Length: 186
Length: 423
Ligand code: HEM
Ligand code: FES
Image 1 (spheres, rainbow over the protein chains, first blue to last red):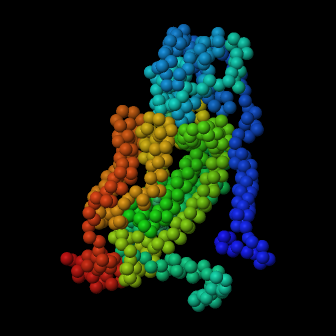
Image 2 (image 1 turned 45 degrees about the vertical axis):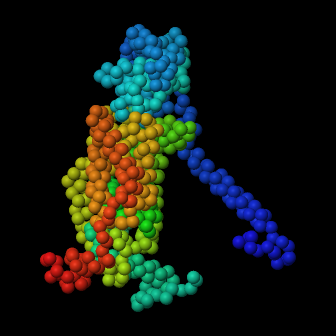
Image 3 (image 1 turned 90 degrees about the horizontal axis):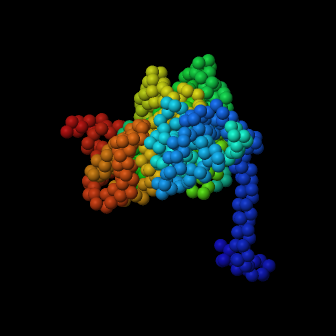
């Protein structure tokens, strides 16, 4: 439309480029304005301050016998703590990295000098179910670690994914040994 | 078009309103005298049934919300209290719960009708696509509603479904955290799901309005799939189809009542009567029955992202169905091969639903994969090719023609046709 009206009533030639430019500027400003208004609404859905604040728990390892696994809660998520036997540590360390779907050394998944303890976020990396394997009656899968009942993923005693559909290993949460028998997660 | 409307209503009050806001004229035009093909069969009841169902869901939902407590500590107990202590609470809950199942039964049949009689073809493509949007909104609403009673299936269903988004590369994890409002499905998640579950049916109502506006521009399709040619081919919507829809509604309410009063939990899962426990996953988690075919497709693919893409793809193909089907003939009545394949397709979806409810092992996986492959084959390969190859049967000249000569038409002139029906 603007291109077909070359002169203005006061005799000045109309510049269609200027008009398009003004339209674009107005349009973009409106988009930015709406975006700026929408962001607080969207961000209000993200984790709030009080949720973020609940970020560490301590746990006493002494009662956990060799071969036993327990589940504790950190940030609303299950955390697996397992006291591994010497034989289990050996199998975990001797696996060839090329046999793993998500290659990781066992040594990198435990704290130096505490290789009998494995601490993992107990959430299947497929779609978030809690794998079985901590209770003595639970199935542990073919690799002696954990078995996810939802779609059949299997993890070894290092929490490494050995059978899909899970795409990755069980993550190791941030934690530290306070003393030899006490850890702090988070 | 500024100016008062010239109303034809005699009643002075109605006339006064109609002159200023022509609602009465509009209703008469769209639902009274609206010209409708005279050869509808009972498949054409299901749109109206879906509308009734939507109203039932909104009505029962609003009253349930008055006694529902959206918190992880109180949700499960408040639902039990509704069932045991609130006056008629059991009725409200069971109608709402089974109403969701009825809604999907009705809409799936409604969609089957659209596919069988080619209602999605030109000029009704947009009408069909708006329908698919409604289906997506319904799925989201039903999913979030199922989370509200905060049982084990609610919790783990919510966990698995929200985690689907973590398959998206790069931004996936952020989206999941945003959905949860935390690091797992928890109180903030339950609260927002309640808020959205309340909102969405009203969004659906808006989209249904567009669906009906689009329908009234193109007019309805009919079992013969040919356009009405003259006034002889149509009937005024009222009373002919208000009556026919009422017959269907009685049958629909009967089925609904059997579910509500005799087997209210038949379609549900008993694990949802166990309160949610974030540390223990039930050994066999399944979604509600109406999601099972899609769940089976998700599980048939051994890769996380692949499964999620296929599942959403299963609905995305419906969007482009009007362009995948290349046949110019609408109704399966005149497409001998397509007609058979429609039944094969229905069997395929039912089998998918069946294996979706079984544990993912052994034969179930293989059957699921074969049926998933066929689902996509049907849309992406068979329909485009079949439309070009198939030789359709000759189409009737007009709607009146076959109705008058073959009988069975619910039309005023039916008396004339009676003797010939015996042929
Ligand atoms: C809340 C859900 C829905 C409601 C309330 C609704 C309502 C209606 C109504 C009242 C009609 C007219 C009556 C009839 O032809 O049966 C109609 C027609 C139609 N609907 Fe829906 N609908 C819904 C969902 C869907 C879905 C999910 C689809 C497909 C994906 C769909 C596709 C169509 C088509 C293609 C027509 C035109 C049918 C024809 O005239 O042959 N609808 N709808
Ligand atoms: S959630 Fe564990 S295998 Fe799918």
